[in-house]
Length: 305
Picture 1 (cartoon, rainbow, N blue to C red):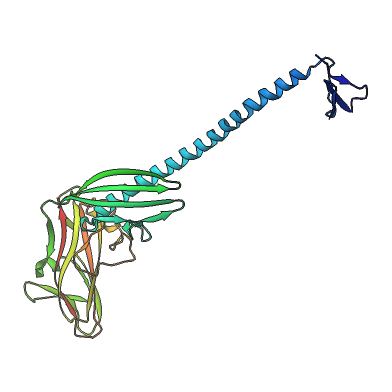
Picture 2 (picture 1 turned 90 degrees about the horizontal axis):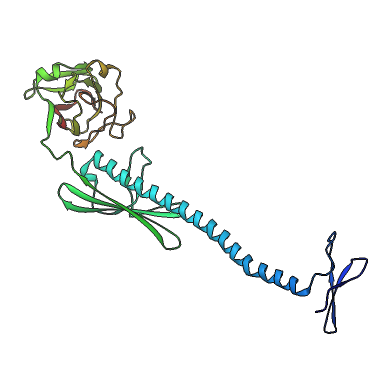
């Protein structure tokens, strides 16, 4: 077999075989040993050509696998959040857990259904509510992402408030007299009622403190009966605590769980924070016409033991 021939200056490597000559530039600083055969070079190049693609595929596959796992983890988190949001909606009001496909949002500080799905970055989430019976719902949270991937999580929710609804009712002169009035007076209409005092157009009433006698009652809705001036308005806030003395420092809350809103529609679900055994309400009466007050005939704070 012909051997590689090298010139003394090492600018080029001269290959010679069967009378065919070619020049291959030598690499800068490369020391070439005499006696290296053409066959050895061909074998080395061939081995590299075989294994290089495999190594590249292995590296690329590992990167792809890591990315796929990260996407799956994100989808699992979104699905779990969807189930927890449905549970929060159930706790707020069972009637709000309507059947069908839903998107979610919580721009008001609490979860609500909105549309039929929602887009979160590269993911699309749909929370589907299926009715089992009047007091049970099956929830499916499905998350999809490109290309053609999906993940689903399921749970069953029950209407744990579907027990006997009881309530604290103020509807007599004696009951209203236990509260604190400001520009409001107790009148003898029916068994007793509240109205704004003469020559004023607004006032408020803070009820007595009420002990439900239950460590953690599940509050249902605030209802009331109003008569008198139809142009007048009555609105409420509620606060709760674990103790009678704790009501003094508790925060008045509206239906969104903040102090900035009021109950303005009878039958609105009650939202509480912290302890709930003791409860108190505050009523605001307003009239655009002096001496023509709205009349508050009764108030019912509903809860399930």
